[in-house]
Image 1 (cartoon, rainbow, N blue to C red):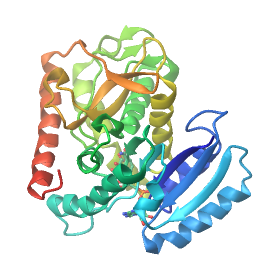
Image 2 (cartoon, rainbow, N blue to C red):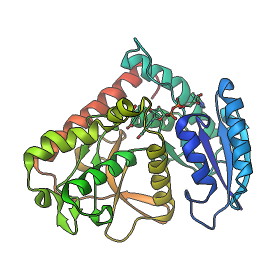
Image 3 (cartoon, helix red, strand yellow):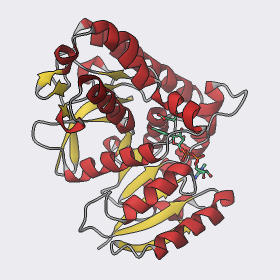
Image 4 (cartoon, rainbow, N blue to C red):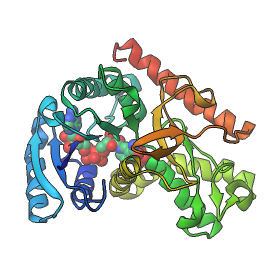
Amino acid sequence: MATTVTVTGAAGQIGYALLFRIASGQLLGPDKPVHLNLLEIPQGVKAAEGTALELFDSAFPLLAGIDVYDDAKQAFDGANIALLVGARPRTKGMERADLLEANGGIFKPQGEAIAAGAADDIKVLVVGNPANTNALIAASNADGVPKERFTAMTRLDHNRAIAQLAQKTGAPVSEITNMTIWGNHSPSMYPDLFNAKVKGERAWDAVGDEAWVADEYIPRVGKRGAEIIEARGASSAASAASAAIDHVYDWVNGTKDGEWVSMAVPSTGAYGVPEGIISSFPVTVSGGEYTIVEGLDVPEFSQQRIDKTVAELQEEREAVAKLGLV
Ligand SMILES: NC(=O)C1=CN([C@@H]2O[C@H](COP(=O)(O)OP(=O)(O)OC[C@H]3O[C@@H](n4cnc5c(N)ncnc54)[C@H](O)[C@@H]3O)[C@@H](O)[C@H]2O)C=CC1
Ligand SMILES: O=C([O-])CC(=O)C(=O)O
């Protein structure tokens, strides 16, 4: 039977890069048929229908069917995987609280729709920004769905952190392992070189340059989204889609022995991160379930930065709590 994958914001730029990769089998694996449910707002439906025609024209052997909706209840009905990409972007003059409120109007009803009709094994990835807090809003409004099924995407940050480190050390990307992004998908995120490895050696030692790590590497990874917007005139799309594929593929198929990946997941209280907020951690996956990797080395350099990004997440949680969204 086909796996039902619901994608919101299907007519957006990430949607366009993502859908063809899902339909070709890269989200779940080469032998798993998928049925796509595309959700858009009414103004986006026509363009989503156009994309559906192109998906049809691609004659993907694994694409079992496509439906386009402007109603969340219908789009999430029977969903096994939900990719929540559509979000309200920040526009001129909009304060952070306005942005959180506008997104509350999207992620609250979507959480309710997931609770109402998604399959029992539903797995949710929130990509739309502010991703961690949008995931918290959806999870908080999905009565009866286990909170740990709601995750947010920091895999793009994880991949960016690997690529920058590979460039600095001259090691191939495949020799960079055990990267972790801690905290929020925002410039406050912390890419951790104490636990990452370059050809099996601690990355911090392989680099051997604290000033570069503190003053160049961490800000570069944190602000890479803005750098892409500056260069492209639009935010990252294909790399974001690629990271969403990586996130879900690993969640479904598992991580390699000895390796972990970064996912923003509800905190269990690990590493002193307050329980319940959706924060990025190192996770391993087996049998379709992830586990936060515990007991890693967190020196003062890391702790200060983790505390800062986690404090930002707590502030966002307080802001949406005031709005009655969580
Ligand atoms: N977590 C991450 O690493 C990244 C997150 N993002 C975020 O992903 C989101 C999408 O980015 P793009 O595709 O470039 O934006 P986009 O503006 O091209 O597309 C967004 C689409 O979502 C649709 N949409 C809005 N509200 C909706 C709703 N309630 N239901 C269904 N669809 C809805 C819009 O009509 C639009 O077609 C943005 O919030 C962006 O900031 C982007 C890059 C990386
Ligand atoms: O910065 C943005 O607006 C898009 C984004 O989340 C990223 O590229 O990491």
